[in-house]
Image 1 (cartoon, helix red, strand yellow):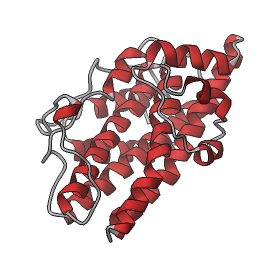
Image 2 (image 1 turned 90 degrees about the horizontal axis):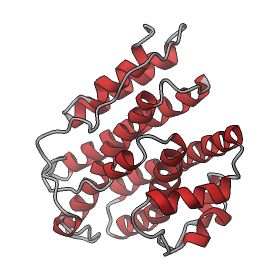
Image 3 (image 1 turned 90 degrees about the vertical axis):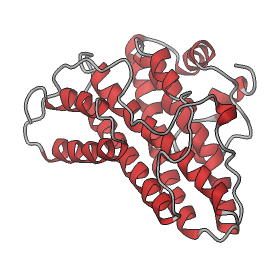
Image 4 (image 1 turned 180 degrees about the horizontal axis):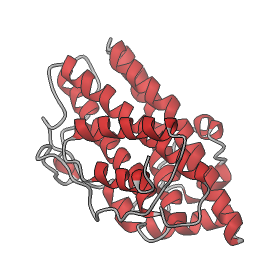
Length: 268
């Protein structure tokens, strides 16, 4: 790997419009980083917005098809399509944090963790994309909304805010809702889709744990109390309420205790 390879490679992925190639390029870069004997992070400036394919069309959330899980395949396709779109955003968010904060004084293990997360998000997208094809559809067949990337734009200048909002709000929300989706898919007889979501759920616990770990590490570096700081940042930068019920068990597995989020339930 060259001195610019990791940060510049992250930017190349962000500038890749094809969702499939973005995911596969992310997996290749992560493998190269793991196998490299001479790691250099380098510096690179990410784009304001990542490149995206022509489809899906981006629309307001109310115009996106409902994700009703049941015997009808259309509802399950809508669910998996929405999740694939979330995972595509998650790929870009992970590589954006690698590139955007490449000039910060951060340990190499910080980059190790985010490369690992980017790799798993790519895997999640490819699993969902393949399952959509098995059901007779594909990513881009339905409209999607662009709300997730707003979290990147809102926290572009503040690593602490980015950690507070992306892994500790958005990904933690995934821990709340995914077990019920798995249960409903199993009830509908779609065990293959349920198995994909089970893989995603287990690995997302680790993503929330990484976000919480580095949030608390950065708070310690800046002499800030983490719980109150997180609540202030979420109230400032996150649009919408923290919606209960919370999956306290899954969040606890990520080392994310209720004293963080319960005081903000339904208030932000």
